[in-house]
Image (cartoon, rainbow, N blue to C red):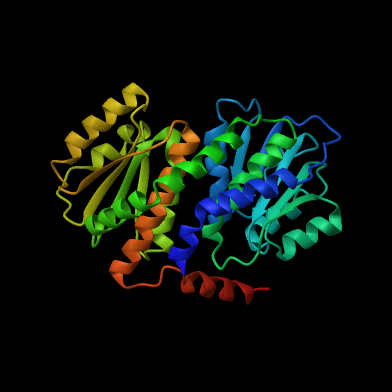
Length: 330
């Protein structure tokens, strides 16, 4: 089942663009001078990508929250986006309730549930996605694209990033077979080893997404860090031989030169203590295209690794158990 959902990623992006084009987002009555996005897990990771995509264009602070609370600075000059695929994510609903009387421009993005019901009840703008997908983390394309459209329709960004999503679809479709073949080989290389994921700070969302997919789909631990920050701390931790670790670098041929050199030096240092080092280079022209390529590749790696480990990539029974126990608290 999860492999079918991953296969549909290009089609999902296409549908997401259609939904976004047809969405109605009313202008705010006040000037917007900051953006806050509340979302968890598979519904929240889209905001991480958006933040990276728009950093060179958006003139407003773009802040992401992943918890029960909203910051005190949310006011009438804030665009507040609440994203939850199920519409029932308790952290997001809690955070949203705290800003109900703030005067903020509130937009909800969801497949249904309490969030859409709340939006209708309180008159918030909302974009409703198809709610029949069995896995919120497989719906990254829906939430990411809708966030871009909210920003675009409120004149916070132009159309460039949205157009780059369109070109990403063509790239992924064209390279689908090669992506799957590469992913299968990478999965075989990292089987039985803890993935340690490194990339540049401009692509941390890619690393976070891959880590989360290894966690949820492959049912395995992983960690990530970014360059240059890891050069100021984690690099020093490489002092012993680790036979159970596989280091994965997500790289771009046009990485900032000093970061590229840092990665080369990192690799030289780490190779003394780890013999499983994998470098993966992106395809595409823009950051958006490269990121979507990496997302699709990483999703397939996580599925092939799940197959090799003999686990069900779709189930998240431990999360369901956690939610059930929390529900007893009322």
